[in-house]
Every structure is written in structure tokens, then in C-alpha cells.
Length: 281
View: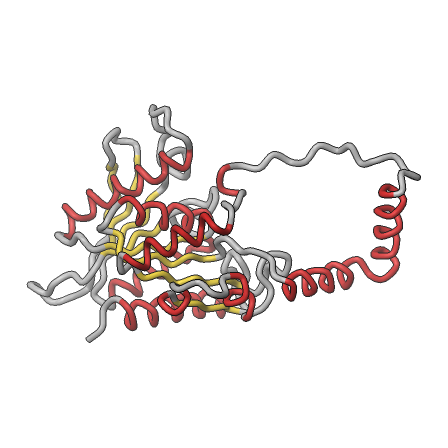
């Protein structure tokens, strides 16, 4: 296997590393995996998980491309007037074009880490070549049980004394016996805001009806976001597509996939899903 890095894209501003598959000459390419940024982390991925995954995939006979989206890592900013989200969707499709030309395959999967999951599912809505997306720590919507678990976590973190003090301050402000907190909220970027649940559920219905495979995967290190296995089924209860998507929670893995065991768990989850859903014998 010999990786090579080159500049791609309509504007010639995207840097991408192509990892060919280790396979016999003449063997067909089942799909190409797209790997990209997680937030502002470069294309190598959090703690180089994209590099490790690319090499495991190569041994499975699956080529991959890891790239930096516009303005991230080694890629330059685009001269376009698109929004960030629109630009990153366009970037991904440009890289798919380059990968299709390189590997001769028009069937793609994207490993979407955090913000990459948002981009991956939006690309799949626009481009029929994207046949599967792994959605790592994507949108989560609170349920009664998850709210109670979040409250318990906050009380445990602050201690009984600290929690009581916070509750007293909230009560005094509600009774207008203490000045309100006028601290302006921190601004949220495009990638930090979840769409209304109904809108997102409609997107998933559209993707699954088109046969796109989705793996919703969450870590166990964000108790204020997603905090128990039952939360996924509870927050999407009654949706007709629920049985058509895959779900996994890696309780001992953090959001950035930091430790060796966490990396192995993530790789094992990803490759098992690919074998089950995308490259069946």
C-alpha cells in the first residue's frame, strides 16, 4: 500500500490523502470510504483515528480518502460565497469525484465524526453515490430519562452543597429577589445547533427510503448529551425508519476516541458494520 496526497477540487484548494486497497490485481472495489475533519481537527482525525482506520480498511480491500474541508488543516479557504455547511458539502462531493476517478468506484460511505456526521448525511441527501454514513455523536434529543440522568450527573459533579447553592440562586432570581444574570449567551456556529427533531426525522426517513445505510453511534463520555442506550429508541419512538437504521453506543469511549482501547473499539464497530451492511460475502 502506498498512500499519496494531492490537491483536488474545482478550485484546486482541497488537500486529500488517497489510500489504495491491498488486493489482488483485477479485484473489484466494493466502495470507497470518505474520512474527514472532526470539528477543526485535521484530516488525520482525533488522535489519528482516520489514519488507523484507513489502513485497516485497505487490508479489507477497501480504498479511502481522508481530506481537509475548506479552511481546515492543509486546505485553503474557498472563494465561494456559500455558507460553511454548503461549502463543506460541496467539498465532499468534489473529493468523491476525485476518488471515483482514482479508484473507479461510484459507491461511497462516509465516516462522519461529529461535524463530519452532519456533512455526511447532507451529502447523502444530495448525491446518490453516498450509500452509507456513520454518524458519530451527531444530534441527540432529550427524553425524560436522559434529563433525569443529566440532572444526577450535574448534582454529582457539583456536590450537594454546590447544587443547593445553584438552586437557591435560580429560585431567588425567579422570585426577583436577586438581579438577573445578564451574561449574553455564547454564539453558536452552524455545526453547534441541532435542527428541530421533526425536520431531522424527515431527513432520516428520506435517506432510509432511498436505501442509504445509517449507523448512529455515540460515545459514553458526554453524559449531558447522550447518556444511556435506551435514549436513542426513546427519542425516535414510533418512527417507521427506526428498524432500518443501526445504533451503537461505546460506553467506554470518549468523544475524541483518545485511548488505545477506545480506538480499537471504534475500528471494530466500524468494520463490523461495513461487513454486515455494505460488503457482505
